Length: 190
Image (tube, rainbow, N blue to C red; front, side, top):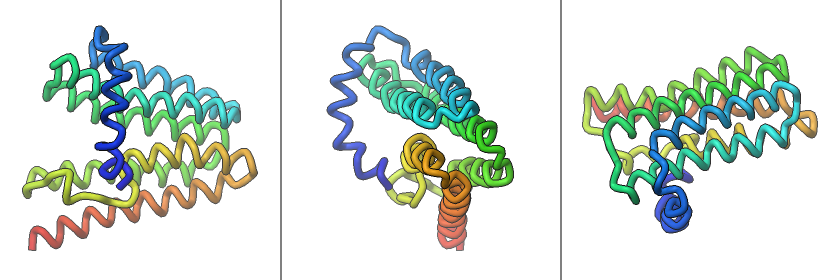
């Protein structure tokens, strides 16, 4: 939801920032987000919630920057788009693993991760059966919302002693969104 609404507003800013990095290969920027996620996960594992959150925000920022660099440098490719989608899943998983290490709340982390993985899978698998576009899929917890929950909301919740409540909310919201997509596909296929 946030992604669809803010993309057109943030695109000019991302283009301006991308000009400074246009000499970098976009896929390298994509892969660098994994490194930032690993460091953020380490910080989460030692309960440095805000340090981990800040690096997680930067990892998410790179996710937007790599596409802007690719468009500006005319290096967009199917491989780049595919790599970006796969790396997105790694980043979310790595960050949630760090949260699990820091909290020990593995059941809730597992359920949140499962929901986070099912959201894009439900759409990607639907695309194998029916026509899918990005306009008709404005769901509750898309990538931007999930990253806000993981990188911004969770660190504050953990700092104030509400880590478990936040993870429960993430698990519920992520699975609710996956179910939104599943039911949409069911309705379209009928």
